[in-house]
Length: 320
Image (tube, rainbow, N blue to C red):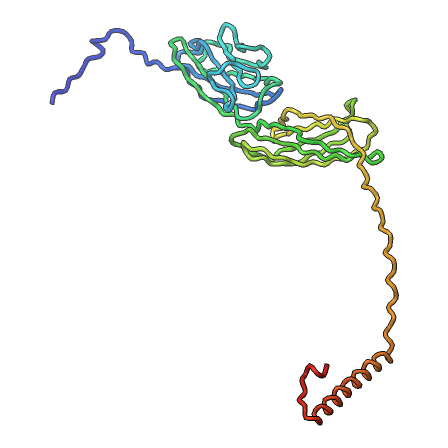
């Protein structure tokens, strides 16, 4: 076996450089995605060629159930942010979702800290989200990180029916509300909030009901409320609040109480005429019947003897 040893130092002139892309060495995340909520994302990057070697940092927040990393930005499901030494932090499609942010100021350092606050849109859909981080250097070296942000919902609330009756000024309401849990993973206990207001928006009554709807299922909930009022119409509002205090979109229904109809009074039937009194049979009647029966038997016996004395046979039919 022959072993060949190459003299690298003599055959390849110049320096031997070992290249490494930027390295994400630490991160932290806080908050949850939902309407008007705030999410904080902090991370630390190290670059052996100094931080000046980093040309761009990109952060993409997207809904894992309704969107994807490569999808277009939307107010409901998808936000994209970039950072460069020249422009700092910027939002790509919109402008209102970039909150407080910070970044390193010394490009000659080897390690730097970045901070990004994502201000969720009022249309932001809660649930299962992800934050994607990408750091690219001048040699197109790249490091990436994906962080899952676990959330609940989204929930859909639909008022199916409202039945309201009024007696005096007391109004009793019974409503059936359908709650749908669209989350593929989580099914926590949530609060179903139902409240009734008048036409001016004054709150008349409110009820919180703890419910549990399995993941990707819906459930019909019965709720009863009562209040006093004198208007013709009222507004019922229903929504769900999850353990992160994120509320679902509201559903409303306008209703008018009705006066319960009393059942028609029962018409009494006229009383039946009394039965004629029963006249008891006198005891002498039964004595008379018994005596007549004895006489008939004696007559038949005498008749039979007379026939026998004349030598004639007696037929049974002759005695009757």
